[in-house]
Image 1 (spheres, rainbow, N blue to C red):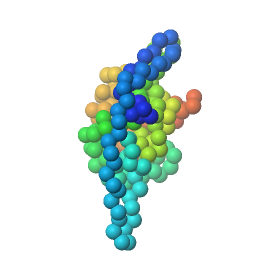
Image 2 (image 1 turned 90 degrees about the vertical axis):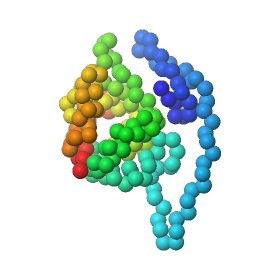
Image 3 (image 1 turned 90 degrees about the horizontal axis):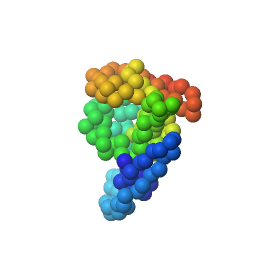
Length: 173
C-alpha cells in the first residue's frame, strides 16, 4: 500500500479485526517547480492544492457536481482515469472489509476533498459495496464492473457511509 501522510510505501497487516500499518521508509518529496503566473486578465485554475493525489485541472474541470449524490462526468475523464488510475488513486487506501469472516465491501481511507475520489463524492470511511449492481466483495464481479466502465453511460455506486446506505450516481456524457 501507500501512506500519503508519510509519503511512503507501507504494509498493512490484519489479525482478529485489528489493522496495523508498517511504514517501510520515507520518500523525500521532489523540489516543486515554481507555479506559472497567469497573464494579465487570466484567472488561475483551481484544481486542488497541487500536492500528491490532487486532481489535475483537465480532469477536475470535466466533473460537474449536480448534488451531493449526483455528478455529470465527461467521457474523456473516464478514459484518463482508466489510463492513469495508479497515479490518480494513490492517495487513497483501499481495504477489503470482512464481517463474520465474509468480505462485504471495500473500505476507503485517506480521501481528501481535492483528490479524485473526493471530487467524485466519496469520503474517508465509505464502504464501497456495488457498482452498477456488481458486488465489490467479489474480485470477479469487481473486474467485470471495471471492464464495463469504458462503455457505461451511467454508474450507480452503492456505499455504506457511517452505517447508512447511500447511492451515488454518475452520468457519463
